Length: 258
Image 1 (cartoon, rainbow, N blue to C red):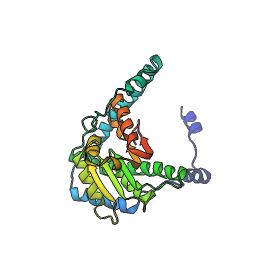
Image 2 (tube, helix red, strand yellow; image 1 turned 90 degrees about the vertical axis):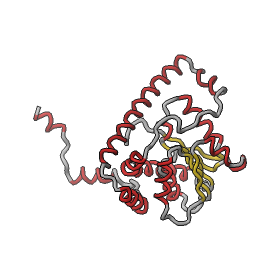
Image 3 (cartoon, one colour; image 1 turned 120 degrees about the vertical axis):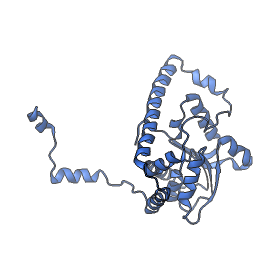
């Protein structure tokens, strides 16, 4: 057995180390101002049980991962058995789903753990996706943006990096008041902010702005659909979000933890 292990383990040489270092070329580093904002926010909380809360939050996301895997498998089977099932149902679905009544609800301690453990990774993912949008649409500069399931504002920070001068108004849909408060706290020292309005649901947004203002240049839904366990609710929400964008809808969902 020892001989077999020696044969399969790769030796570290100058060449292998040089090749490994190239794999990190182009990796995006979280900007200093965001790192400072996160550090200050966490320091202000004075939480002595951060590691425990981060672990509990990770366990919550693990349970979501399992649900997503099961949902994908069951949906695939249903589509094979009845390919037109969801096409027929979609015509009857009204705007009834109220994000916030389903999925994860964040308490203050969970929000602190989220900022400490997950926000940098979510920011990096948002930045990568938005950078790709900018590459594919070089003339695109969004002025009005809707961030659905905004959380603590990871997508907003990425927007500021990718399109630093074009943002005029950002509408945020986030049912967790704790998340909203954290997001506002993190950006309080930034200058030249666009107009930011927060809402608890899509319905609240639609009721409080005029029809002429409901269309956005860009709608973002980053990782939020993974917290919604019902396939019908997910499809309903995507249909609502599609109706709120003028040009681009960005939606990405994870099936595994970071």
